[in-house]
Image (cartoon, rainbow, N blue to C red):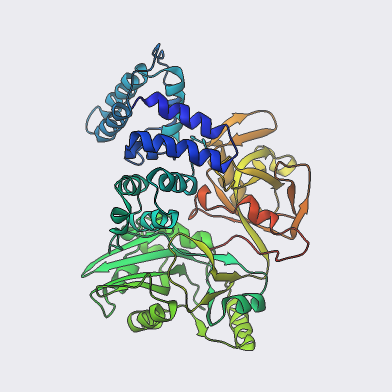
Length: 508
């Protein structure tokens, strides 16, 4: 297949806001090509993952475009694979030459696509959810089967390739110790009584203000992953040592880790996250708290009810189980919430004891209860400060995720809650992501997720989504989350006053 067909489909997908139209265009291309690399390209990453092409190196390329399309998908995929393999003395120059050779064979439209692909700016709207629906449509298999296979394989291209051979190939994917699965997520609840009433027989657990981790152990081999499935094993030796000492041969645990003060209170979230990049691991020790067990000694537990997974968890994790209470009364659940808040945590999570582990899904079987409204939004722009903040990027432009794959939808601005330290940090980070600048506003690549506390949401014609945040203030940046995990415009609209639940969005 010619690469230009991928570029044309990308443009068509980006030109429509209709999810059905996006899915249809993508499915048609997948059906015609059957090449896994196409799936990677259209969700905005090379099939090899990050290949080390520097943002400035790519944007500085000035190569006359080819007069007509001749590149195939295989040509491009092979060239990017070869680029990623270049190393050793003189590799920088050889890498530039390899890119120049590829770009010389590309038309102007193909060059533009390649630049956005390599710099992470490919915003054609083919987010994972849209692409999974397209794969299911192209292969004529149930969407749920495709989504489950993806959560277990961790690879969209591999999932697509399996889907095109039939449903049996998708069913062959299993939990593999050492390969992370997408974490199950909690939906917001309006109140603790509402969550208890909806969930039924439940466990109520502390919602810790830490970093999500997933640990895998096979014999003496232990691997630790973040919520984005990034491996951080080498930076957390104390967690590795602890898991290696658990009474089992193999296990997969889901939980949180956080740094504690001497009196057992959680340290600020940023301090916990800083450990994943620390050079001296003695700087700050992390404490793990596990709340789920997905595998134990050869037995996969994903499809078991939570009550069975909790039995396995208590058997293997002992004192490292997150605090909580099984089958509490309303008063007992309220006491758990009070205890969590008094301990410095965010609230509680109410979980159905009948629920299977829905990897990667935000369902109603797990519901989080927090005392304040928060949203995880994407920074899409920022204004220069004035007065004491002159020379610093201050007033943030905030966007909610479009669930149909479009660019983030602006819902408000804020400069409140920013410390001097955070102002200096965000100025550096946002300038490094700038795509346009004028005297007042800097537009940035929508990469950074920020947690915003707010008093509510109101109808407003000022922003494209028709809603605006009320009294928004910064809680913290979320380096553990990518833009695909930000709250959607639907979650923002759910906070509008009126009949029906107005859920508290954001968080875990």
